Image (cartoon, rainbow, N blue to C red):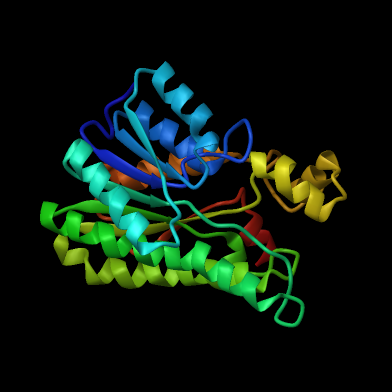
Amino acid sequence: MSDRLKGKVALILGAGSVGPGWGNGRAMAVRFAEEGAKVFGVDKDLARMAETVERIKAIGGDIEIAHCDVTQSAQIADIVRQCVEKWGRIDILVNNVGGSASGGPVELDEDVWDAQVDSNLKSVFLSCKHVLPVMEKQGNGAIINMSSTSGTRWTGSAQVAYAATKAGVIQLSKVVAIQYAKKGIRVNTIVPGQLHTPMVEVRLAGQRSGGDVEKLLEQRQARIPLPFMGDGRDTANAAVFLASDEARFITGTEIVVDGGMSVRCG
C-alpha cells in the first residue's frame, strides 16, 4: 500500500461490478485503498460488492459498504450520514452510477428516458447536494464524476438519453467546480471510452453482437488507436490522480481515458 491518499475518506457511489473483473467502480475502490484511503462503497446490489470487499481486505485496506438507490435523495443523505459517523469526514466523492439505453427520440420510451436522466444525471446532482455541505465545512474536498465519450461525440450508435445525460454530467461538474472553488473543493470529470469491463460480457455483447463477446471486442478495438483496450484500472488511475494532492490546481476539467479514440472519431 502507498500513502498518496493516506488519511482520506472516499465515498464511491457504484463501487461494485456486474461481473468478475475490473469494472470502473471496483477498480477505483481498490486503487483508492491501495493508496491509503478509507473507502465507503455504495451499490444498489450489495452482492456486486463482494469481490470489491474481498480485494480490499486482502491488501489490508479499510472498506465499509452500504445499499443505496442513488436516485433517491433521502437514501443518499443517509449514506452520507453513515460515512461521516463512521470516519468523521468525506474527502473524495466519486459518482460512478449509470447505464445506457439504445434509441433516438422516436424509438426510446419516455419512461426509459426518465430512468436514464435519474440514474445518470440526477444521481450526481443529489450526491453533490448532500456531500458539498460536508466538504464545505471541512474546507476541502475532491469530487470526481464519471461521464463517457458518448457525452462528447457520436460513438457509433443512437443513445440519445445516455449521450445527453453524460454531456450533462460534464457541464454540471464545471458549474459546481467554479461555484465551490473558493471553498477549496475541486470538481472534475473522467470521460472513459470503450473499455473492456465486465459489462461487455454481461450486458453489451447481448445488446450489440448477438452475445458474441469476441466480435464485440474486435469492433471496439478497431476504434482505438492504441493496440490494446483499457479496463477499469485505467479509469481508476486517473481517479487516483484527481483525488490526490498532486491535482491540487486542477478543477472544472475532464480527463479522457479512451486510448485516443476521441481524437480519431473527432
